[in-house]
Length: 523
Ligand SMILES: [Ca+2]
Ligand SMILES: [Ca+2]
Image (cartoon, rainbow, N blue to C red; front, side, top):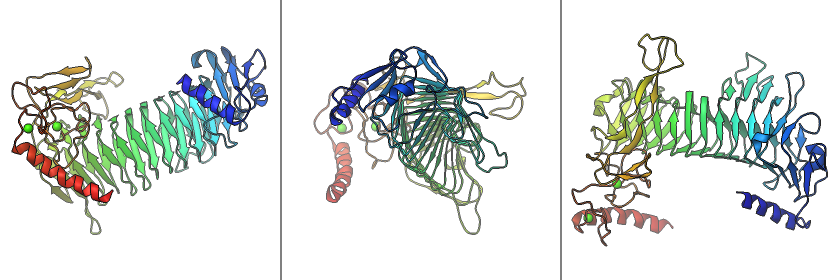
């Protein structure tokens, strides 16, 4: 990381014809960070010593378009900008609104107690800086129609925010009658394409939106952890959310306003809600603790594991809801209905298509109040043999017992996630030992996905066919078992990995031959 930054700064410096750039130290050379920035040419470094910085010149700090690095000497824990903003006296940490590019780097700094209407910690407008290893905490936005982005606000920006912690920031509105209130307790991004990588968003508060609010644009959210009330709110965006752990109480992800989010390889507690012509694609996700709710929207659910919800795992609430489910597992949701199609009207009929999935209770557990169930090929109803199913436990934060499960008054229960790798006698990836282990049973979900789906990164022997569930098609897919001894060597022509070359392999070959011919002709 450091090398990349140095290289980046070096390239910039060379391009700007200024050589290596100068290092300007605060407070040794300059009394304030702003004074140091004002003295900088492109390629320079502002190095901030340990300490807590306050007052003019150490808040509302403006990069003024410079391609420079502003960084702490010893990391964000020991280098704090205390904005000391209040509702009456607004102050932020940093402003980047002069067309800054990725060469403008903010690194290793804590920002706290910012207060503004937009961007309590950092405000980016039409600029795309790099924000690395920063801690942004206890910042507030509060505005007439809305407060936007309590931690970071980005408008028409391609900023990179990496390895940052955003915690206990608050987005609020001054107008309690406003239909839209606090947006983005952690980060608000509109238009452009902000990239948020390996960040932790914890206990940020927002009236209405989420820890991250994406409005339009194509943001990328990768490898992030979200804890607290709400996760990501996507509105009209093409957000790509992958490899995230979103453990929220109210909801995990909301998609609205013609949103086309791609949600991939995430573990989500708090559910996904999709409405207003949105069409999320949900792939290889584990969803527990609350349901997927579809209103006027369509969703595709591929290779997902949906379990441990108090009610159905999926509900189509609106007559305009559409859902296509493949290669997925709906198991141990706490209702007679794993999936429910709720209502229809004279204009629209909700439709749910399910194929190559393991639905506990089979089609009888897809409860159709009004609407259409398209029960496709390859569905099964067999114990998926999870490595660990997970369990309900009393929520230590709830009042004394009244035997309510999953919410409501009295004692609440929370779902403790299990391990949703599928058991296999040939090998299952074990999260604890980080190694392959062998079980005494083999899940029927192994090699039970759509034969036309690519097996992807499934390790050998993979049966030549994708597994159901969240690890299907990945390097952590459970291995295929054909009886002892397990085939350990690859034989040319043995596609399914059973140590024999026979018609089973030929059948798989023929199936994919047709597929690849189609691909080949289109390339
Ligand atoms: Ca397989
Ligand atoms: Ca074979």
